[in-house]
Image (cartoon, rainbow, N blue to C red; front, side, top):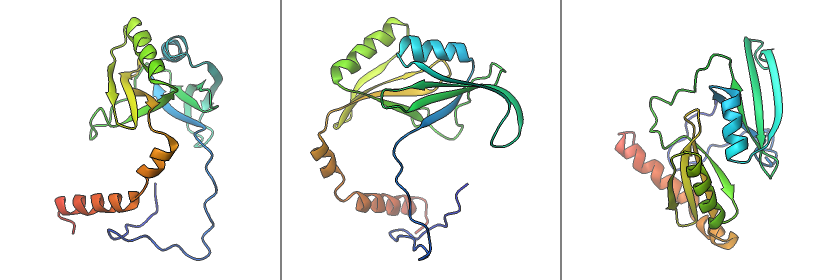
Length: 191
């Protein structure tokens, strides 16, 4: 749970002078989610998407909390070394969608190198009976959307924009966010 206090719209929170500096975050180590069945999930991520099963953990007690909960934790590795990971809690229950969030919001977006690869993966998924939405043009990248066997929405993306174009996209980004924050506050009556 965050301990950050609300900062008035358009202002940056002042940090104490003795606040330790942030250290560089080098990338994603893993993103973990619940799955209904570890083998069903393995078949989808390894056999269809081509992500190798990289690591397996079997425990009865959660190391971080000490809570008793028998589980299997499986990891699928991507070419950059990061992983998608899943917990099978042994009860055949799939993760429930968030009741206050539209189904298109929470998703995992994964990168491929080219639009041709994106189209090839769309064809591969469809050949395995997976329903795919897109190819969708987002101006700086194109993507496809689909669900894994656990109901988790996935997106595969192919970058279109160059590094220079993306640097240009960052110009004024804080001002744009501040404008959105003011618009939202006005709409919600929190001016």
